[in-house]
Amino acid sequence: MVKRLLLIYCLFCLTAAPLAAQHKLFGWLKSEPDTAYLKDLTEDLTFRFYGSRKYSKYDIVDIKKKKDILYRPNSPFNIGFGANYKFIGLNLGFNFPFVNRHNDKYGKTNYLDLQSHVYLRKLVIDLYASVYKGFYVANAEQVYGKDYTSQNPYPQRPDMRNTTLGLNTQYIFNDKKFSYRAPNLQNEYQKKSAGSLIVGGDFFYVKVKGDSSLIPSNIADTGFLHDIHYYRTDIFSSTANVGYAYTLVIERHWFVSLSVTGGIGVNRTNLYLENGKVTRDFGWQINNTVRASIGYNSVKYFAGIHYVGNTNRSEMALPNTYQTFGAGNFRVSVVRRFVLKHQLF
Image (cartoon, rainbow, N blue to C red; front, side):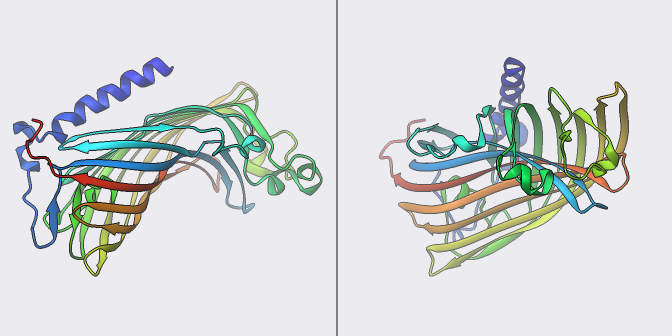
């Protein structure tokens, strides 16, 4: 499965690479920024030191019962460094034991997360390709009751595996004055406040599987999810989305940036029940993507916090129930840019 995931991810990247290079075939993507609002620093060499945490999540929700089961992996906080030059970027992150030494209580998670965010002048392309194995229940008291969680505060499911493949593409209307690159890639500098309407669409495939029912057998409320028990779910979904992004610049250097998009579409969900039956039904799909940043930016320096998160809500065939899956990245960056006397290429 990991080899297949790497192959699919490489195909995604090969598809996006010509876009990043603004190949002639995609000439319509070319854009000259308004220099009163933006300064293009892509020809400078950008170095960064950063800390980052990627995440994945899976929730099962019973609306009528007003209860849910929140599954989370034990993902580490990585520290690393990276660089950008023109359309090429590379980041290397490392899991240092002394940084994550208190995470043992959540159990062990093995994962491969190839999440990438490609920021062009007119387009944003989010690529999701990940496998997480090993989860814990984040709201254990609600699920199991106080007596059980007093002895087991973080019940673990080392058998659970979550596979996610996704592609989200969004078009930026006001690309001449508004920049996603400035807070997220740090190879542009936004001088004045500006915003833009954003529209796009996405496709996702998610598989969650355990050795036994994803609804615990010793759950406190036995009527949760109509007492239906399934050990695997496959979700195929597609949505169209729209939203708005705005960056507030204070005294030319301090900034706060927020982007929120919401979408609606359809999903096809397969549930593999413990009694051997398999249900296959269509349902509504609702999603949102949030990008938020705050910090300091200038021609030479950048320091900031930035977050990207995607959440998808998939309606199930059972009345008043749905599943939620999501992925994201939280990062802190310190950046220094260097002007080159001679361009490398």
